[in-house]
Image (cartoon, one colour):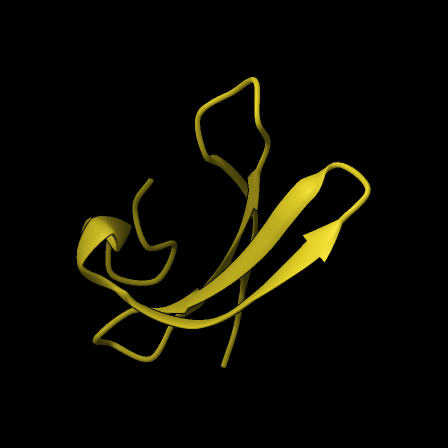
Length: 55
């Protein structure tokens, strides 16, 4: 997954928070440029980029 604002890899981004949901976990990450992404992590799939939010 890449940052929607600067196209850097989000693998280096800082995790802001992770929350359990009925689908798995939602993880909020902040890129070095300040962009925020939201990932949905499920037990049966790899991380999926759900939404790129503006800070």
